[in-house]
Image 1 (tube, rainbow, N blue to C red):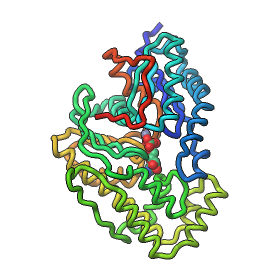
Image 2 (cartoon, protein in one colour; image 1 turned 180 degrees about the vertical axis):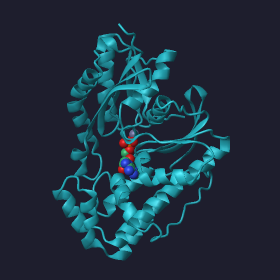
Image 3 (cartoon, rainbow, N blue to C red; image 1 turned 45 degrees about the vertical axis):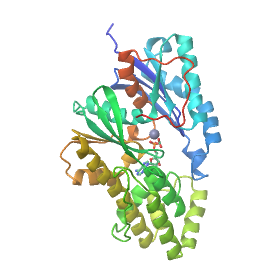
Image 4 (tube, helix red, strand yellow; image 1 turned 90 degrees about the horizontal axis):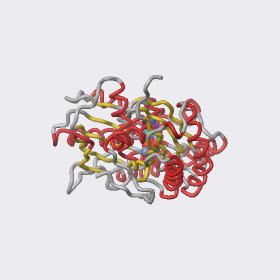
Length: 364
Ligand code: KG4
Ligand code: ZN
């Protein structure tokens, strides 16, 4: 029988996706199952923590079973069980963690605790290794999602140093809030991304916050407030109400449907907002990379899906390679948790069965 590599079953439940995956040698994704709760939270315009925990409880057993089945594994044939222990919504984290602990206890396989942010970074490292273009270290990681906007130096042996973070909203949160303000659905990032190319990005000028103590920190609240002021000045309440009403009747409208409800000035606002957010991200990332001589830039997290951000990073012609995850590995998934757990498996870095979940767990 052919020898198999070391397999990790990973579980992720930090926010609104229940996910499980089996990954071999930190690199080969044998399965990656994601049960999204978009339909549940969409009608509330954001994640409702109590509903999210309940949905995780409903989904966790079938999602893990499916991940094992697709991978052709049983609990007995995996080498370890990895799980996200933070940061995230504590009620959500506890569902995944409790189940992972019980699987570990029942199977005798070690438990590995993973930081969600490290998972996002490892999604990119996994794909780069698989494509035989491994990420050179030290690298700069820009982690941009609904909950985080962080800059880390990634050193050998996956040692992290925090260089900057958002002072207020996360980048994805800013996309989501702006979309909601204008009557679009949730999550707003993909909607704004699909509409922005139809608008004039020079239509509305936004100014940038200067960071007093740390020039590598981000701020998105000023941008959000500027959008709010623009909306107030335009008197477009009816237009916004029409989109809200449409969104209530149609769970996930298509780009064409949103376009039909979006006049040019609104598309111009969206394009200008996206352009400003991307400029904020890339300017500070480039400065951070320069500060320690990064050999690569890793962009990770849900906002890494943004096509405008990808195009701008390409156009910037940075003096080091830039790595983005494929869309399936950008947003929350468990394959990235398994990938981050692999070096810990090799080092024998296991977690005790009384390990807790931490809503604000820091990576560095
Ligand atoms: O990583 P993720 O799935 O969950 C968190 O850990 O937060 O990121 C979700 C976030 C949401 O705020 C969503 O609006 C944003 O990522 N997002 C995008 C895009 N796709 C997802 N933001 C901008 N452009 C996109 N294409
Ligand atoms: Zn995430």
